[in-house]
Image (cartoon, rainbow, N blue to C red; front, side, top):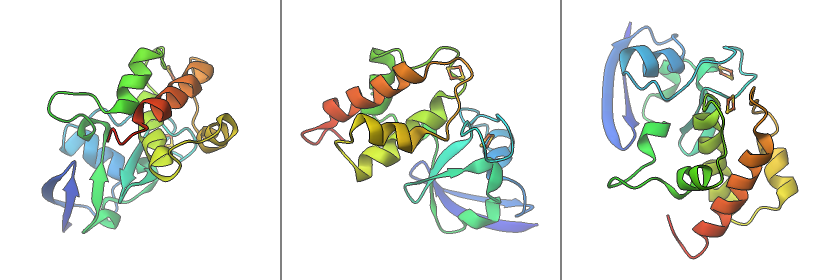
Length: 158
Ligand code: FES
Ligand code: FES
């Protein structure tokens, strides 16, 4: 067991855990942040994606001990002051989901993309999101939502 301290959705977090446990299960079971989803458990599907220091990571494949001193953002940390993040709003506006299971991971990785490439081409979005699986087959609407988010975020909207 080890005490791990990190920043979680903008607030300090400190917990004593088996540092080898996957971040996914610490988030879901210990911290009740169930927006992060378990899909494959093998770093393949992307459902468990969170941001660590603004980079997308597969939380099923990252030990919680690795986030010591770092910033972790989950889907619960995106909305501010009761308003959805523009990428979340774009997914709502373009219905970029069906069951919603893959959606948190899709949105967080889209945020990471748009932070680096505010105006990506459709091909760049496809390439960036290529390793996320949507079992509902909503991929086209997901891509539309990310394009829409890029448009609405132009001009400095968060
Ligand atoms: S649950 Fe982590 S990538 Fe599928
Ligand atoms: S919306 Fe159901 S898995 Fe993607």
